[in-house]
Length: 358
Image 1 (cartoon, rainbow, N blue to C red):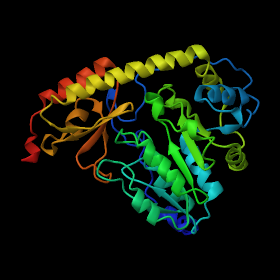
Image 2: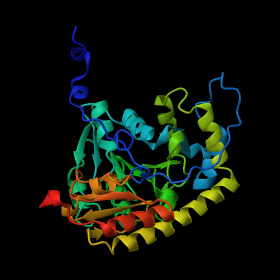
Image 3: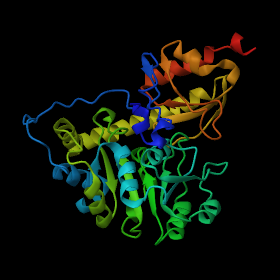
Image 4: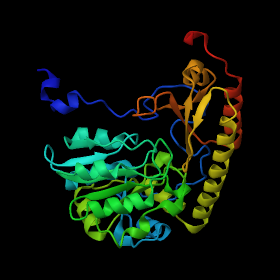
């Protein structure tokens, strides 16, 4: 028996998402996954690991609801925001019939998840300023159930204009849901759509503890939506999505004193980001530094310097974005510590045109 004959055809041809940890680079300065550079200090408290956890731990939900400014019945907790991306497709999309929309350049898991589940997708590129092409979206809404918009957008770092998002919500009313992926919103909270939840029942917001909370390793995310949507998602989520250690650390992270530490972290990263941007603009290998509202910076480099490999050879790991629409010769640099940012700029300033490019 050929095992491949048993597999679904779409899985045989699937190109899996290449996460930062799947790319087997070695280095000592990791600036490729938008993680916080220093681990927080939490100690495990719970001892009853022989018992299953609650599916939706109420203390985490209550604490995050308070942090986000919503009601507890508007919150679902999951294995990172990635699980929420999948749950929404499971609930609202019929395979082979319904359509999701996403707008590259953007986060790759919207496309990959749709392909895994057999959901049709429609790619509507952003315009030259990486804003939404509302005219094109409006003209291609047939069978569309979900529209995924990352804000701030990964990997470009820009904020989607709030006026465009409001127009889009009005355009798709009674037809589709708008999913705003706010994984990086803690670095620019004024851009959040959370205050719109009461006005737009078809708005869904995704959040995570991976970035500003410095907890990428525990995989804990949240869906914020009206209670009717939350109840539907609860029908299809795994019985025990979070482990006891994850619940324990997430509860601690959402305590008032640790939220203050997170706010301090955000201030540090935003400051380091501006220091990094200023330094990058002084490097001869840099063609353009794009403005960012997140914990990373997108940079277009002169290809003659072969920056990715040159830095990798010195133990600095960045994220190549050249395969994304319109991002040829672009690398994404996670904002690290002050010393890491300074070191990266120092190395870049010393680069010379590679002999391999001539």
